[in-house]
Image (cartoon, rainbow, N blue to C red; front, side, top):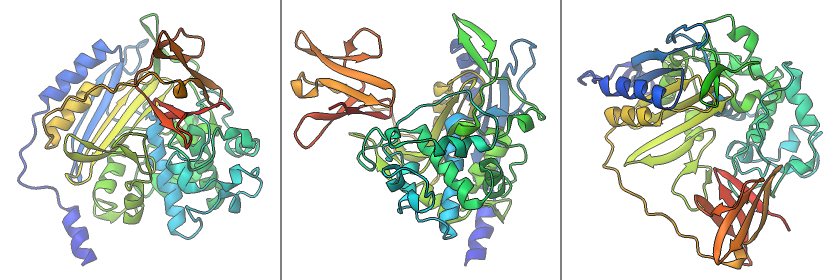
Amino acid sequence: MLRALAFFLSLPLLAQPAPDFTSIEKSAREELASLHVPGASIAIVRGNEVIYAKAFGMADVESGERVRPEMLFRLGSTTKMLTATALVSLSLEGKLDLNAPIGKYLPTLPPKLSQVTANQLLSHTSGIRDEAPMYGSHDDSALGNGIRSWTDDWLFTAPGRIFSYSNPGYWMAGYLVESLSGKPYADAMEERVFRPCSMTHTTLRPTTAMTWPLAQGHQESAGVLTVARPAADNAGSWPAGSVFSNTADLARFVTAFLNDGLVDGKRALDPKVISILSTTHSRYPESADTYGYGLEIRELRGVHVVEHSGSRMGYGSHIRMAPEQRVGIIILTNRTGAELPATLEKASELMLPLQAKVARAAREITADERHVGVYRNGAERLEVVSENGQLKLKRGGAPSAPLRNVVLVPGADGRTEYVFSGSRAFARVQ
């Protein structure tokens, strides 16, 4: 039976007309210009084939070199699905209980942090604060050295209370990969993810990445695009968002994900890993969208998709997969945080049976003194204030602004306990 399934999944999807990719290419060129993005690389997987791969724009605005599909980009947070793949594979080998306190495996952690579970780390419910320093040590030892310096102050709230996106939570997950495998994180990822999927030009090490064709990262200041110099690197945060890869290699991971772990008819990933990553493990407050491990899970106009975006200094990325249709869309860019949302939508409309768009009504937040207060996540501070009978939000030193695009999460006493904004929760300061 398993052989028959493997044979079926190794076959290309037949009797489907070749799509017309004109709308995608037009959109990509328009968005590069309108969003001031130097270049991009796009690939589309259907079944077990890459049916589209094309590069656009500039790899380097200073030299004028064009982007080529084989060029590497830095992924940002799409790295998280790869880190999760490695850690879950270790759990399936019996080296880790995802629901056990991580202090069982990392005995030097302080008391409160030691009670966090790997499940909470991977599902962003650990209560660990968020930050994303771009610069730091380049040495493999940086990950462990950083984690061993943590105190319980890294928790901004109790574990398991609420979804709150945490890059440091994935540093800890990567350190578990390192500790349980007995190898530096970068080497463990090579052994457990990149090599099995034949991702031959994917790496975490900048000094390896620079030996292959590389799209330079860019940033924009006062409307001017420049190469991001010096290039960001912090080995202590690699597990959250620092993989270098190209669309060809990522298409192999996506192909395995969409085809029960098979690439070229060979086993690359354990199907159980794929199932665990794409199962809901946490929920966003007041939203139908959920989170698996390293993957956002949602219904996109009637189609079930798992996806993740990424931002790293100089780069942006997005990987969207529709498992039922066996379709994957990969977009890489070389400007800080840049995505091509209209192009992603065009590709999704072309490849997936999307329903018509439905406008969502704006959510009103009524003025109530129970919302007023100060809220924190690490060093970042929000304040909800009442001004002339209207709730407003103060963020950092900016002037107060109307309270929009946030969720106010009540505690047992009815007072707001968390402000949820931009995928991060901010806990009330008592």
